[in-house]
Amino acid sequence: MVTEITQGIKISVKTTYRPDLSDLQQNKFVFSYNIYVENHNDTPVQLVSRHWNILEAEGHYREVDGEGVVGEKPVIQPNSFFQYESFSEIHSEIGKMWGTYMMVDLHTHKLFEVVIPEFKLETLFKLN
Image (cartoon, one colour):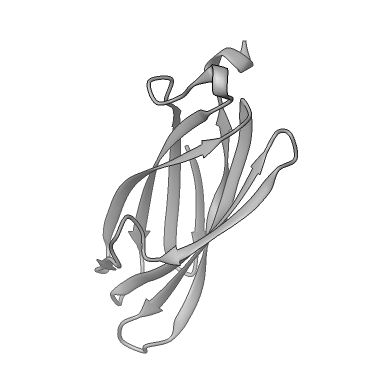
């Protein structure tokens, strides 16, 4: 698990290779990632958008932007957390992802950016 804290928001990420969703013959490698967003501030925050950077071993790079996460724009109360699972498909056995969330402090209505730490996408068989 990798972790990063930005402006009182702690992001932790755990990844899992999903052979049940992957197809080696088609160079389709699927990974799930569980993300924990913890609010260590005194005010509630809302996650409003995301920006992902995805880099594959072969050098293929792409960016993904969107509103919220998994169809939600969660409000996270002080000393509370939001957890979700999502998936990424890449076309090599190894890759990595990193990015940012845009959040808003619900008391001041100010937007701020939170770092999503870099995490690896690695098949188990490639590591052996």
